[in-house]
Length: 426
Image 1 (cartoon, helix red, strand yellow):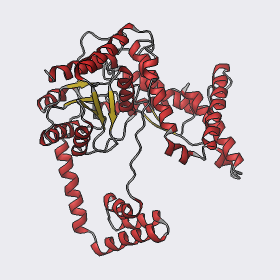
Image 2: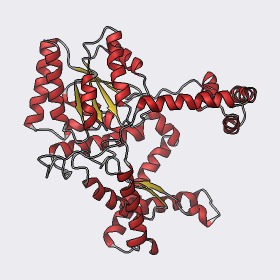
Image 3: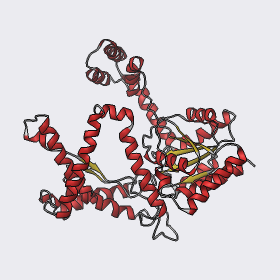
Image 4: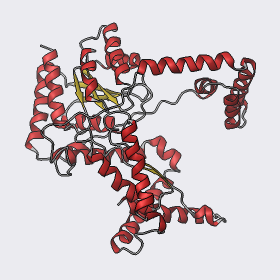
């Protein structure tokens, strides 16, 4: 499938560029960079991730990718160690040096199955391209939220299949290990990283030509109002050693700051469980809570810090809404104080932190403290995402009530969360 996707993409690129009137033969050639899947990486039995990454890398090579990033085996747990990064690198080297795949152009050409799948993908993808064109182009489609919602719909449907056991993930929902041995992980000292970054910023500001920097930022600001090449002006600001934050602020006065509209799906996850007695029992339990409390259990899903990965958070929001929770989703890149204020304003029972970028040891305790400072210490905080088990005790001691790692069964998690809310309200 992944190989056929790349082959279909080349057909589509050639077709579109031909319609644009491209003259150079090189312009008709699609050049791609691929990365092996982060979604397929699992926390449970993590050495299986070496196999997953290897066959995903092979699929990309067979599909003709020009550039490839291979994920490390421990990236569903933490940032990669030197050991896991070396295996990821060597996966590429073995493909390049030992398989002969680089010596053949389009190795799967002529295979009936691959050619048929390529043609089918190209045909269906063209329908999507035409749909986007009918909306006025990709910019307008993105503004409407259509592409993102389609991706999230597919992700929610697949997650439901995994949770039901209809799609097998080895070591997660089938062939699980009775006991898992811990693996070495990379521990990030967030305090040290922050202090180091602040020190670097202070050094830059102390050693740069401040007059030249101010003049470059002023020129950028002027062009936002009067017109002109903003990219050129931004490059000049960078050459004058202005920071990314300063460059952004110079434009924010005119353009404002983008705040994405949060849209969530309904019914996609729950539809996969239609007729399932266990799922219906959880929904009934949620209904009983609503009868007892006069309202449904309410959860705020938040992304804090510089973590822009929200697919998992959106899947959780969709699934819990279908189970019967009232779910609010915060915007990306919130501070703990902003997330705490959202929780208070929405009068939630619980906040779910989605963490994918190793910021949990800094951000989760700050959120707990921000809630206490706001007089809302009764709001529970839970975490999910890429969090090493070695960090669990630290988070529990900081006030986090539960942690759900990759591969967590969502209906089971919903049961646990409902129990936590009930216990907290006794």
